[in-house]
Length: 413
Image (cartoon, rainbow, N blue to C red; front, side):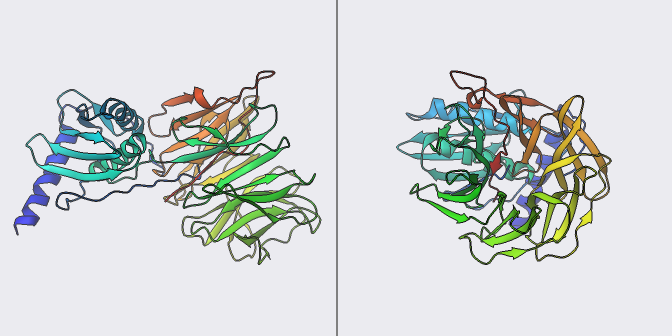
């Protein structure tokens, strides 16, 4: 009875705090691949998850974290929590985040204004990584929603003068060039565990699919059918890859094992299938289908069958990406003299255009998307419409303005 009373009290405090003196924002909640690798061990008792209304922001104070790496970790934590869209930092705080960072460890704690512990956890690893993990746990504990601060991105850029694969953190930090092939590379996809990247490369002179092990750097060509092999997308469990293959004439949807075997044809049409994206449960695939009248979104069982059209209200729809909560698809449309990002609610809520740009991918929270616009990558909060450019991942080369316009990829766990 005591534990139930404590849980009820914390939830009541969270609900009242969310209403007290807080700024509500308009919520159009319709509900990249991204890696969210939260970890660490709890060093205090288990605490209940507190859920507050998605239409409210929570006042939260981030006290400077102690220790040798405290200043840098504090800044990372503050940035992560601000970008999440769920918090107002400072003011009359309902909660306080605090802790210390040193020697590869972060001990984090969140307490309410009455001194009750909402979260207490220990993390090991780099200071920046630990701060990201702490931020994601704060988001999930206080809102019930997943965070995305631990996410990784993969994208194509031409910094070297050629289209190469790059990887980095969700906020544009720690970017590194993954391939140095000097040929065209397109359509990167990160496995759900964040350990592998699949992409289409032209090393042989033809578009084949390769998989790179990020830990060892080993690379294997897994699909090299005659013709085009592109748009590889890992399944949610990481064991299969969906892609577009043209060995039969026109590009059709196929699935293969993550090692390249067991090819299975899903579609049999006279049109062009491209850009597959998996449902969160792995049972369905949405893709772009063009029968000569303009590409449209279609939906099919991951075991094959007849694709069914998805009504979007737009005549040109490409590069779909399924949100982790299974409720929405972000995709490209044509409009305004260029590409725009649209979101369709699979529950029948209609379609809305949210920004100029192309090749959108969802974050683990099913709220944020990252996409390319011109030479840069942007993070968009689809609830508040807040948009932020990642200047550190601009695809610029010394000789020309490059493009980050090929598919961006995330992993989601």
